[in-house]
Length: 468
Ligand code: DUC
Ligand code: ZN
Ligand code: ZN
Image (cartoon, rainbow, N blue to C red):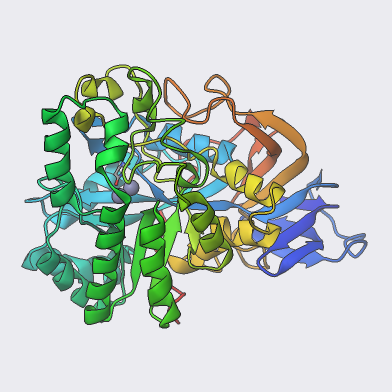
């Protein structure tokens, strides 16, 4: 295996940015050198990173490749989605394997392995969605933690009839997690109440995409988040609230954290940058591009400012994408004339690192916090650290060389996700991914993808290291 010396760059970690040369030997980082100290070091290849940041590869802990949802399948396969992730400086994803109601958990997991095995450009792990909690599913949780490297389980307070669990089921799964050490990840929206509001809106003839954002009210995300926090307190289990979009939800998590509870949360770029008025409310059916749940919130309230503050204050631990792409043609179009039938999801796996870097440019977060929320904390939260999430001797050489002096504009034509549009069309980005290494192999350089399908390996994860 080859040795690569990355010289002249500034390594960014959670505690700061320091000019450092990095030696990669085979699949791992071999050594770090202060400037000038690597003079006698031999390598097969030297990469000049002068003027650039050298950061740990991004970790997106919330993706849905090929998810069957809303009568169709998310349009990125593991092959196309992980390649797009690599383009954008993400070198690990954690996708959600699915147990539907009535299915055996291990069968759902086997189906997900079959989709991903041999197809991925970068390393990947799985969380498990539990859509049917019964005695067998509870036993399966122990089995997955002990044997399969799956240490986090997602439950849904929304989508009755699809993924929904009631409060009793949720409490039982949380009690099991408190025994086996797993993290419970929660989709916090009050689904039964939302379904009533959906039916009432449709009966009034309110069928356009914008009503998706109106009926899925932020109070119902706040209420569900609070309920999840209370239930996890009773069960004494760690709780990780996924894709947070609303101030009311942040308040519930912040209050629990203030009490010292093991309650964590993530948000996603769409909630930090997009507003209902600019997206879902566009004329005609165009708003369908941005239908996701929880929905993109109104710009008239202060959700975005609160989420940025939450990121700065560690009330929000991670930024993921909830990458769940659907094309307009034949997919989003399923909801023409009925917003509730539009498949829920946005594709962003390629743009997360760039989009969050804009928070550094605008002063909303620091350079270190960018790396912490997008790379390091995701690894620690989900049992991958220090193999992933840090540039240190012995860690996997998942490395991104990021050029802060190049600008780019996001367009569908220049993106690599398997979609017929971009939710980020026209977004100006200050900064650009220059070179990406995945376990010591260069997979992106010189504006080319040079990786291979099947390079990515399944990661058996340990327990969350945030709890140790
Ligand atoms: N939200 C989405 O937008 N898509 C997939 C599932 C989810 O919870
Ligand atoms: Zn969800
Ligand atoms: Zn999701």
